[in-house]
Image (cartoon, rainbow, N blue to C red; front, side):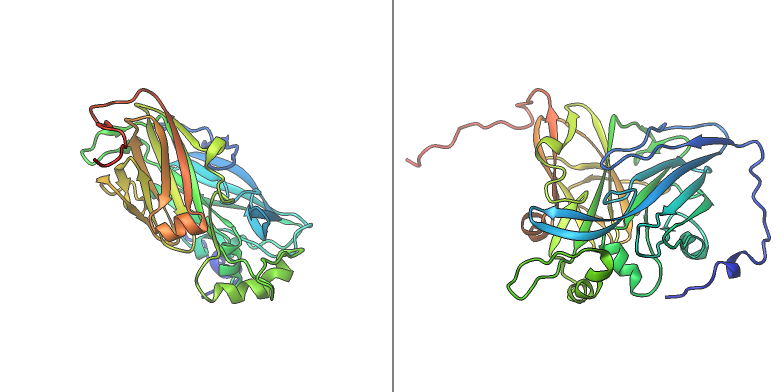
Length: 351
């Protein structure tokens, strides 16, 4: 893949930034599945939205007894969701502590130029860098580490990606142009892991990401993940950690995949409005049973819940959902509507 030094991108500046008078707003990033505080509509002047991410190379347990040497933005898989509005400037301070082993950077699919910012953000352990870009394309987008060569897929499949949502100034619109307002919003990051085994068939454990690299690359070449997680660990969004909602509430789901393709289905519900590819400039499709999330993109969908209960939110490659871990839950409170569904007769012996 093409690479070049930062100097070649900034040697000749034709248009200078004009940030005079723009308000600076500090965004406090939070761990997924939650979103930072934000307005769904914003009619004021563009702002400079500044935030900080500290890169963490850390061991995480993707399922009981199975460990990976992960690389993360801000310590989570996926990295935190950034939320801004069209026309805002994103100003990120990216820090690579000296306790890390590897060089990192960040490629924003939402940005324009310099390999998505990757050419301007390479930081060795003990360094930090500040990148600013204009959020001029509303939608949901992936960001990920892309330091070059084989390190690009290795860092991504080691967990180093996240997403950004750029909201239209006048808010989300449905397929008829009407305003869409959500009561809750959740960010789900789907991750394929490639965990090596030893000669006895047991998953191996390593002291750091440098030592695990060669073995992991061999597993990666088979193109089949050994584990799939939603938000960093099998079952991370199930049971007491299930996403919450109430009957009558409209929920926005942002789902990202940085490497493999996925197909999202809400069992017992639908995608009322789905922005394919995450583009808010396009008219959303409606009443979707399953919607695609391609590797390297984030997709947005809303659903208004009509019945209480536990909804399974799955990758509808059911092998990946049931056997590898691609499943989450939404726990919905409220009263049952018999008009929508009723058990007319309970199970009984056949006469």
